[in-house]
Amino acid sequence: MKKQKSKYIDDGHTIYSMDGLNKERKEKLSVTKKEKHAIIKAAFTVYFPRLLLILLAFSITCLLLYFWLK
Image (cartoon, rainbow, N blue to C red; front, side, top):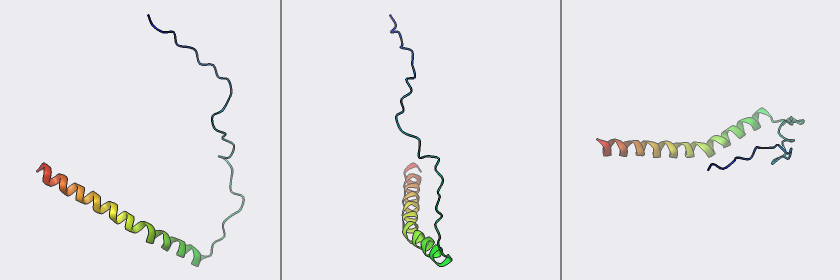
C-alpha cells in the first residue's frame, strides 16, 4: 500500500526575514584618486600571489595527469 502524501498548506510563516535585501546605500563612500589607487594596489598585492599559487597548482596537476595517462 502506498502512503498518502499530505497536501502542503502555506501557513504564512517565514524562515528568514527578507526586509534588508533591497535597501539602497544612502551614503556614498568618498575616496580620492590617490586613495583609490592605493586600495587597488593593496588588493593586487594580496590576491596576485594567491592567483599564481592556484595557477601553479593547476599546471602541476595537468602535467602529472599528462605523464600519468601517457
